[in-house]
Length: 187
Image (tube, rainbow, N blue to C red; front, side):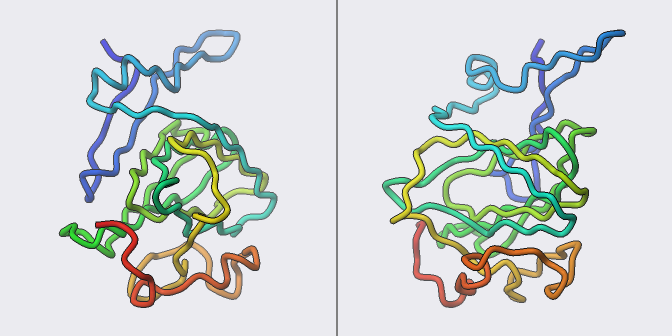
């Protein structure tokens, strides 16, 4: 029996993975990643780097980010403290879901993880203060291949939990192009 469940989303390539928690009077234990168990579930990715972010304010928005080839990345995202709305946007031009997105609430309480494959832009908005997000990636960071998509592009129709004037953003994230202005990155 597996120590996690895998749920489909509206875009089949994006998956919600929920590790089981085993608790007692001391707290809990959870195996959040196991290469063999993931492979048995059909997820055969080679993660090479772990990233960890802290966002102090509610309404901190990070994204929408992706890396182009040859440094494109799959991501496995989870929250260790707090709560986020996590979003993946399909940038695969030949996909029937091109330009569509999946939005999933991830939290330390619900213990869900989001698997975001290559070909998707990824971003999140914090719903609680001092939220910590950890994610595994299948390729190393490359500043040259680090790209983005406008988080507030109306064509995407993302219902962010914060109005544009209330979002805390980096300067970089304020300048990403809209989907219609993005060159074809993924087939």
